[in-house]
Amino acid sequence: MSGTGTGPTTGVTMAGELLTTAVRDDRDVFAVRQIGREVAEAVGLDDLDRIRVGTALSEVGREIVAGARDAHIAFRLEEPAGLVVEITYSPGKQAIAPAGVTLAGRLMDDVRHDTVLRIITMTKRVTDSRAGGEQALAALRARMTESAPTGVLDELRQQNRELAAALEDAKAHREQLVQVNAELEETNAGVLALYNQISEELEETNRGVVALYAELDEKSAQLREASEARNRFWATVSHELRTPLNSVIGLVRLLLGPGGDALTEEQQLQIELIGSSAQTLLALVSELLDMAKAESGRITPALSEVDLPELAERLRMTLRPISGTETVRLTVDVTGGPRTLVTDEVLLVRILRNLLSNALKFTEAGQVTMTARVDDCDVVFVVADTGIGIPREHQQRVFEEFYQVPGTAALNGRGTGLGLPYARRLAEALGGTLHLSSTPGAGTSVTVRLPLAGDATGGVTSEEG
View 1 (spheres, one colour):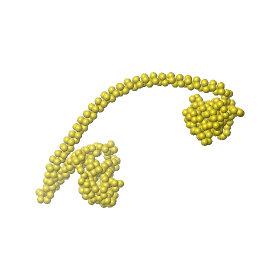
View 2: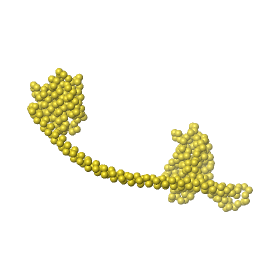
View 3: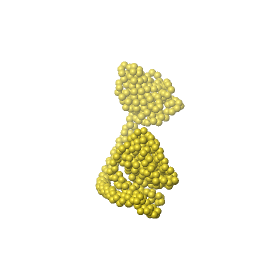
View 4: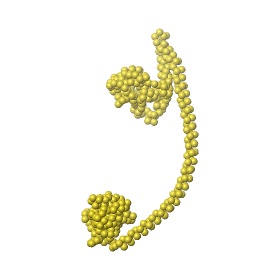
């Protein structure tokens, strides 16, 4: 659009601008309004946004002209801002009234007024721009030059058409709102009925839950009573069996000791078997009693300073008869552990002896090793063997009392199924943990982690083969 005198002028002054125009009087304000709509349409804005851009330009233009000043308006398409309208105006007789700029701020996405530089910048976001490429820009400028408004009446007719279209849209929206309100009322009625139904079902469910909790409490009480009865039974049986077993062991020692009648080789062998069986039963009775104490929480550790190398040597000497075979080698190495640690020596010996005995029982060939190391504030004991191993599906069940892995009948007779559960409970009583890992046919490794309180590392290595 180009013109002389009082008409607006259009053109291109810099790269990236769609077009520019000048505003000098009221007639130019109407022209700028139409130009704004045309530019908005060209860059891809919808009908309502076109009206907003044109109205914002009209309001700001009237405020500029009212102060007897000229203005230069540039339209640009920027990424990612969108359509940018920059209005630069000359000094006037009075300051620009803020009403027009305020209204433009409601119509556009962003409006900034620099009163020092006398620049008003308005931005409208464009989500789908169709004004891409130099050819499209050139076509847009040519079209805008040829489509300048002819006068005030044309602009008023255009505004009336826009107003009529807006009224039609408002009427359609009002009808839609009425329909939506009716649907919402129907939905609310359905929701209310559903809520009442759900409330009744929840009340019934709550009554069932209360009854279930009462039944669970009753079952829990029965389980506690059964557990207490079992512990009392274990303690009673263990106590009653110890005396006759000790008597049997004492009689065996008398028969085999010096001063007794001479025995044949077969008689001596049979008496030794009786003594061995009595020792096994006494150990089992002691474990049952200790398991009852551990399960009921009546084991209280008696902490003291323990000499780890000395304890390891005692264990090796105690288990030496069990490992006295050429096919299994017992190795005890605590050089990586502390010289001393503060714990219950009796419970620690029971844990390690159970693990070592268990490993020796189920290892027919290879070796059984016990190592110790310091890990942060803990001492870690690892008992590993090259025995038959434990299948993955049984590795958690072996911590159940009296459970033995099926399929190894020839070896199961060597154990009672109490060693691992007993060792884990004692480790927990000492504030530690016990974990097991195993590979069938390759062996088993049991890790015991206990709190550490001692001096620098050091120890002794002993081996029995």
